[in-house]
Length: 381
Image (cartoon, rainbow, N blue to C red; front, side, top):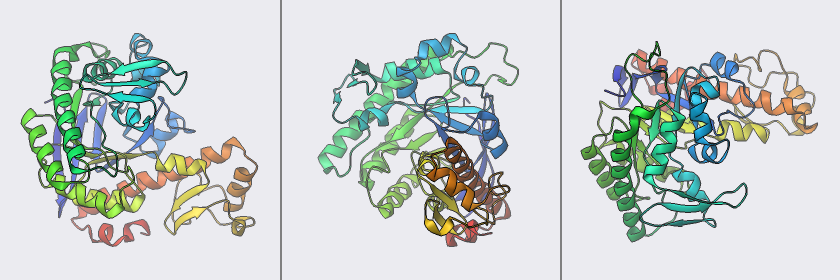
């Protein structure tokens, strides 16, 4: 199997599992920090390792535009390029070209879009997305899909879902005939014969029946794992949970399940309790750059005047290197003074909170009791 998956323990619908990749084991449920341009913003790789990040996400669209996938391939692949020896996942670029609504045109062949950097024209097809992701060499790569906007009529959502399924088949066909081109050293000691793995993406808008149909048809294609995409596009949070639940009913229990682009700490814990294995989101890093910290006491806007002389740590119950050393007053000063260190420290804390949340979830599953996850007390333990 290209993506061995073994469940170690379960509690209700939640499961503690191991995903084996060529660059190490990922213990799930796992949160993946987003490293858009081969960098998790403001955080060096050694700090990510200290925080316990087992896998991070790279962005195909951005890496294709800059510095270019061929350059990264020639330099030995994304792991070597960014000096990251643990697991990597790359997205397909589908969501990014979706977000370029004024700069793209979708056809059966693929998506023509203009670069946000210089306006140059490019074409992403399923085959091109696979070519780029194979060149980047992530352990897990994603089929090219069309992300349906919100709101969208039923007919539009079905049309988009059908396109995603056709593109999934094309992605898989190209991948299976070219996966030998992945730029990993042939004798890589920790590879142990592991191959790059391609995951299919479930679409279908906000219609549970379309989502279930899409999942069933993707399962017939026999991917080694399945993702739920097209969420966090403006829909209500309860709708997000409804869609996730409807798809989890269908997806195989013996393969990893990934929900893309979610969410707040309480949400990712909730989704893990529902049986999701992997999640990613830009929220902890983006919020940090705007002065928003996630803590066991709730969200903290460090810009507020109330913290001007507050000598308490950002989160008294957090053991990260930021909370162990710095005060709220100091973090507020850095942010208002526009010191670059503000973004670094805020981001380190937020990532620590997200990764610690997943650690607490995994521990609860191991103990066989997820009541704390469901009630939210996992954040204050």
